[in-house]
Length: 178
Length: 402
Image (cartoon, rainbow over all chains, first blue to last red; front, side, top):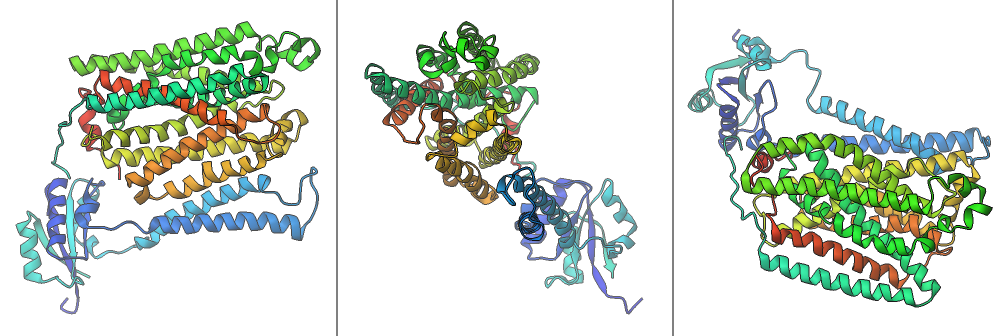
């Protein structure tokens, strides 16, 4: 096992309040590549971890504008250029009848942008994660709260990081291999 | 932050000096506006008719805001909401102006013949369409309905306000349950009455035309203008130092979100009404929009699409901008103006073939609006500006759905 690299370190916390406090302190200690794991969202965690605004809305906007453009172009091109046929005495293209399809495609591609953008930014699906090897970590989906620090973090240091996590009330502090 | 619990530390009352100053200013503007507008009645038929139409636009502007406030209060209890507890008294005070609006409705009764073509006794005899509707569109039935609407609105508004104020003194939680108990039936009454009020006072201006979406359209505009007014009232209070810690940036953010949501709802309803009529292309329906897309009215049509939807949609989409008080205040003021334009677009073409603004459009808004604001503000002098002993107030202050 000597050739295996360290992925990082994980610690378990008693409750959401302790986890929130730990996240704040770990951030204040200068760590950047750390993550918290909880069975449910914790209010105030974004601020405690120092997470900036999400990039997802911009992908949503991009998806929406793409949908709007496709909806317009499809109707205008097929009705006025490719198959210019007068139906029901209506113009070949008018914004009035074009709007519902433009609206629906805007919504559809906004939703796609939101969901798949979120998947992409979270690097999902991810069939393997180093933390999966830790047996206790399975409780993160049920009734336990964890904080992990990656070895790739510039501040990461075997002894120092472990001491910090223990000082913050972390239990079962474990080194995780890749 | 978790574990960091808030307490109510604000003075529940607004500084009496601030209330008195605002009341005096508003009642002065309102009185002068009404006198200046009312003078037009005596200045010939043309000005008299213009007065009644301009007055109807101004009246509907204030009425829809008050009705939106009434709905907000009812729905707060119906859904057992927490987040809106700190804002509820502002809405209760807006809905508390409904008895005053009932008085301000009287000029419309006087102008019945000038406003509503169907009200002339000779009309049904030679107009088969109006004759067909005369069972509903009869003056006596119309007046009875108006009395019933104002009676019900006043009763509901005062019931919720009085019980809420009573809780300020007693802190009795049973009052909360009492109000919740009456919320469902109030919702039902509200939905029917606002729809038929829309039919009676705005749609029947053109008695040949009809739209099944008109009631929902009235409601949609009502909610947009109410949330805009709520934002302005909340910003005014905090600017005057009242409720500075109770009304959080999260509250204003939520007002911005709901304003945004109802702008989209309004656009959806307005477009649906227009779209179905455009597509079906039946003369008795399209005539209404044909008139409103020619003779200068097409400019208002474009202004409403751009100013009542696209611009605020783009502006209020941003979380960052909604949380900035100056921007939110600007958006709220703009939406009140746009709501006036929207009502003007529905009401005024009945009178005017060509679009042209009249000085009475301004003086009637100052008149009715001034009285409306004055009686809204006056209630802050009598009772607390917030339901400070409501058991959910602290939770509403802590809640920040960022």
